[in-house]
Length: 263
Figure 1 (tube, rainbow, N blue to C red):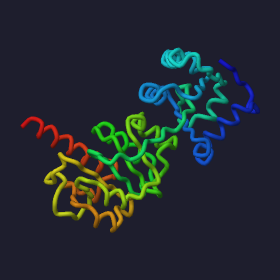
Figure 2: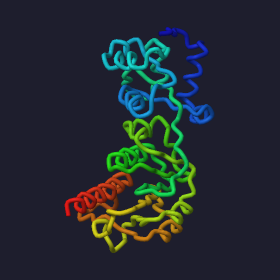
Figure 3: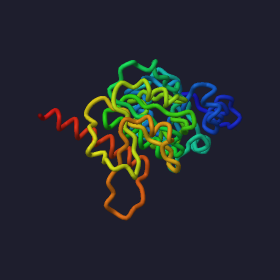
Figure 4: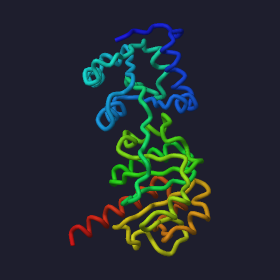
């Protein structure tokens, strides 16, 4: 391991730029994974990170030691806790982070069984939670509009808990064109819709479309949907968080598919 003790070190400065600037991360096609869970998920589903960075205290963590052994002979950097804390974006760092090449999905396949389309999602926590639910529900493809938050930002990565590496995530997409070309049912949600998501047939080829946290789904995409459904809310709350609404819809599809499989 190469020990770095000075903030003037060129390699540390480069890492600090990555940690502080989304523009820098996009420029170099790199993402920073902060914490044992994210780094381990990347190694399991993608491969060896480009670079592993460990703090003095993290070196005492058995899980970090296992990661170091697993990525050998990759050269790792060892930082003092003070330097490492400048790179970490979490309140209580676990002592390891990795610089990785941001995964690029292949060309959009002609045939997609199910997918999620996200229009102008702004909150990193919401996006990360939706990605996590999509992966858990067996969805493989997620498409984000041009004005959605960057899927590979540190906050989205933390909220996704490794789901990024189980999905094919497409950014800067023309969602209207995707909707027009989709071969199955396009399902949108709206609170005032008369038909509930539980009454819709979701077991087949489905694209779920979810809109901005405040403005909702645009009129263009709402009009393009084959079905617009609501989620029943017998309680006094006015609305559901978009990540919660997405989870309800995705797992209603799981329930329906299981029911069909049993018949």
